[in-house]
Image 1 (tube, chains in turn brown, cyan):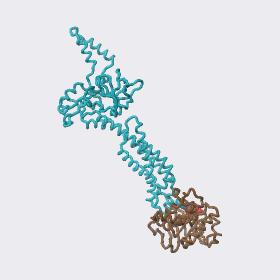
Image 2 (cartoon, rainbow over the protein chains, first blue to last red):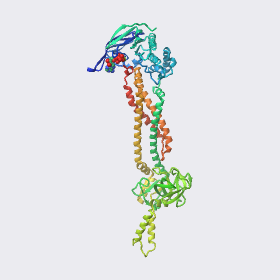
Image 3 (tube, rainbow over the protein chains, first blue to last red):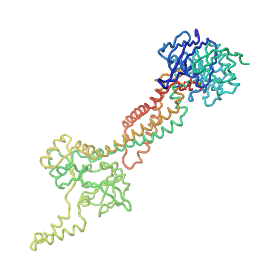
Image 4 (cartoon, rainbow over the protein chains, first blue to last red):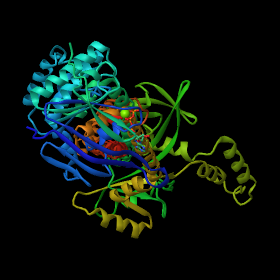
Length: 236
Length: 401
Ligand SMILES: Nc1ncnc2c1ncn2[C@@H]1O[C@H](COP(=O)(O)OP(=O)(O)OP(=O)(O)O)[C@@H](O)[C@H]1O
Ligand SMILES: [Mg+2]
C-alpha cells in the first residue's frame, strides 16, 4: 500500500518572525520504512511535537521536503491540495490522551473515520469491529469512552489511528498514561500492526522502559536529528 | 455517515431537555403575548359582530361610541328609520363601570337596550345561554357569563337594583370587559343623571329665577324641573339596512340629512383595531421583539457553552479529517434541535396557560407556524457565533505540546 514509508529531508520550522522567532526544527532528516516502528526521543522543547505536527499536515513547515509513501507532500511548500483528506486517508494519529469522542460508542469512534471518507455505516462498523477484535477490546464495543479503563481507551484510540489503513501512524507519547505492562502491550500492538498493514510508525516518547524496544531511535536536540541504532530487543 | 449532533444530544439529553424547557417557557410567553393581541382584535370584531349593526350613527365629529364618548338625541332614531334602505334603528348606550353584587364588583360594560323591541334588534345580545331576554322596561339585566353572575342574582348599578334574567356568552367590550345589558331608560339614568344634590341645587336655581317661577302659570316650574332631571341622550343609534341596500350609500344619506357622523362596519373595525388598540399592539410588538432577542441570546449562550465544552473533540475531529461543513452542521443541528424542543414545550405551555388569563387569549395556528419558523431562524442565527469559534479551532490543539 505504501511504497516507501516516510522520508524527511532538511526539514525546517520557524515559529513567528523577527526578534521573537523560534527555530523549532533546524535540520531534520528521517526515514521510516513500511512496517517499521521507530522511536523519537529528545528533551522537552527539542521539537518533537513540532515535527509530528508538520508530518501530520497540521502546521506548515518553513522549508525542506516530506514524502509519504510515493507522494511528495511537501517540498518548500505543500504539494497536496486537500490536507484534510490527506490526514484522513494517509495518516493515523495516536495521542498521549486518547481523545475519543465522548458521545460516540467505541465502535463508532473507530468507524467515524471511514464514514467521513464515505464508506457506508455497516461496512465501516464491521471494519472497526475487526480492528477492535484484533486489539482485544471488542467486548466493550457498545460502551462509551467514559466507561472504559485508560488502557482500553488507548487501544480504541490506536484502532482509530489504524482504521483507514494509513501508510503512516504518528504517536505522541502513546504510553504516558499507562503502567509499564500496558505500555508494553501498546507497543507490541503497534509493532504487530506495522507488520500486518505495512505501516510506518513514529513513536514520540520519554518512556525509558519502551525505548529499548525500538530497532532504531531518532534523537532530536535543539531541532536537529541524529539517528542511532536502538537496542531493538523486542518485548519479552 | 452518522448524525454527530443526534449522538451528542442523546449522550447529554438532560442538558438539552432542561435548557429546551427553559427556552420553551420563554417561547410560551411569546405565544401567549401574540395570543393576547389576537384576543384584543377578536374582542373588537366580536363586539361589532354581536352588535348586529351595519351602521353606527354617532355624535358629529366623534369616533364614538367605543373609542370616544358620543352623545346624541334619543328621538333621532325615528327619522333615521324613515330613510330608504334602513330596516332597524335602535338607541343604545354604553358605559364601562363597576357593577356590584353583594360584596364584590365586576368591571363590566353596561349596555342600555330598548326592551320589547323585536328579537334580534341591533345592540341586543344575539343569543342567550340561559334565561330570557329583557322584557320589562326597568330593573332587569342580561349578563355575560364571564361576569360570574347567575340567573336571579341582584346587581347594583348606581342607585338601582337589577335582577339577572338571562345569561349570554362572549359579549365583551373592545377592552375585553364582559357586558351587562339593562333597559335603555335605566341606562340613560345611570349614565346621564345627576346626583340628588346637583338636582336639588338646579331646582333651587330654577325656583328663584322669576322667568320660570311665574305666579300666573301653574305647572310651569314642575315641567321645567322634570325636563332638567330626565335624560334624553343616547351614545349611538345602531342601524341595520336591507340586504339589497349599499352601506356606504345609506351612510351617506344619513350624513347628509341628519348631519351626523356615520360609520360602516369596515370603518368601525378600522377605528377599533387601527386606533383603539394600536398602542396596545405596539406595546405587545415591543415585548415580542425583546422576547425574541432574549431567546436568541439564551440559545446563543447555551450553544456557545456546549461547543466550548467540546473544543478538544472538535480539534480531534478536524485532525482526523472532518470537514468544516460537517462540524458546522453538527452545531447548527443542535441549535435547531434546542429550538424544536423549546417550541414544543412553549406551545404546550401556551395552550394550557391561555384559558387561565383573565382576558381572552386567542392562539392562532398561523401564529404558531410563524413562531415555529421564527424560532428556527433565531436558533440558526444564534449558532453562528459558536460555529465561527469551532471553525477557528486549530487541529494542532489535538496534538498538544
Ligand atoms: N506555536 C508556537 N509558537 C512559538 N513557538 C513554539 C510554538 N510551539 C512550540 N514552540 C517552540 O518550539 C520549540 C519546540 O517545541 P515542541 O512543542 O516541538 O517541543 P517538544 O519536543 O514537543 O517538547 P515536550 O517534550 O515538552 O513536549 C519550543 O522551544 C517551543 O517553545
Ligand atoms: Mg511535545
